[in-house]
Structures are given as structure tokens and as C-alpha cells.
Image 1: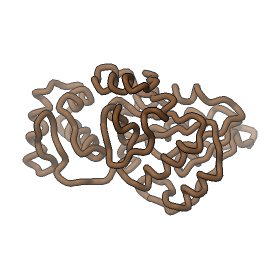
Image 2: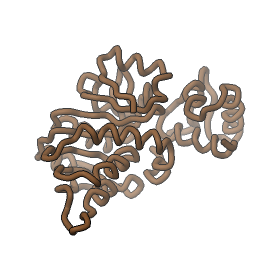
Image 3: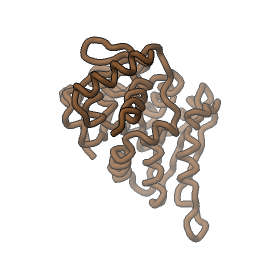
Length: 258
């Protein structure tokens, strides 16, 4: 991986979290800690972050990266997570799906199945699941939640979205957070995103959290689902190396490694 590519990966991590450990960056990039130290020193000179004990902190608070940028990161890991999540769903069931790069891949996995009722605030998820089969028949019943559109995330948010969610009672909520940790549970950077995810979890029999290894042990600004309310956490096998995974298991979280 070239230096510019590593810099972009580090920027992507810091777009989601206030601070990231040297260990986390090294695992994510697949490089040595010494390489990480050199890279963050360069980024600090550029004014993009500042070094702290054990890791780095972003120079100033920033929102989560746009969906198109996040979709390029950890794509294979997210695909594996989506496949595991799809195995839980059965024809005739209803599912909430929020917005994010991992659940967009989940929609691709579900597109070849049939018989689900899908309620989502994500335009991307809705469009992927609304494509008819070869006979022109709809595979699923898809409902798009109203609200105020957010262009960078391609989804609706706000009080109207939450009110519409509360009209439904579903079997599953499939949610993709910014971070998930043993003490805070699942969390998001933006309050509006967290409110939608919290409402979905509250109206579902089971809540499944889809989070790749870069999100394990991370805490973002707004918690929306405590560990005790998570039916399953699906992450990728690279999370096995993280001490934060043990903390989640000790907190009672049922974890699936995809």
C-alpha cells in the first residue's frame, strides 16, 4: 500500500472517531507500528491530526465521511458481514434497515431473495431492493420512510422519520453504527442518525449490529443501542485480534465472525 493510500485510510478512520489507537491503525492497514508512526507524523505536519499517547486525535471535529467514500473502505469485510446477516432473514418477515455502506451491501445480498417486508430510510437500500425479477415481479415489499433528506448519506432523517418508524413492529432491525463498545453499546456520530437507529431498535424483536473490525471498541458521540439490547453483533474475522472484542463478549454480546 502506497503512503497516500495509507493516509486516506487514516483520514477515513478519523472521520468517524475522535481518536484512534496506533494498534487499530496498524491492524487496519496491515503495517507495522513504526510505519504508522511515520505516517501520522506526516499527517500531523499537514495539520490533519495530532498525536496523543497511544494513538492520534483528529485536529477538529468532522462529520462521518460521505457514503460513497465509506463504500470503498473494508469492502470485502463488509460483504462477508452482509452475507451472514442475510442468513438470519426468512420469507414473510419484516426488517428495518438503516443507512450506511455495510447495509447497502446487505441490500445487494437480499436482492436475490424473496418475500421480505423492508422498511428503510436509505434511498440506496430501497432502490437496490426494488429492482424487479426477470418476469417484472417485485421480490420484496419495500417502504421508504419519509423525513428530511441528507444528500451525503442518501437517506431521510428527522422527527417525521422517527414517527413513521413507530408505526411499524418488525422482526429485525439491521443497523450499521459508527462504533460499538462494551460500555457504550452501538453509537453514531450524528444525533439524527442515532435517533433513527434507536427508534428502529425499539420497534424490532431482534436488533442485529453490522460492524467491521475498525468499529469494534470505538465510541462515537451518541449511543443508540446498549449491549444488552443487541441480539447479535456481526463483524469480520480481523476483529478477533482486538482486545475490545473480549470486552463486548464479557458484556454479554453474542458475536458472529464473518
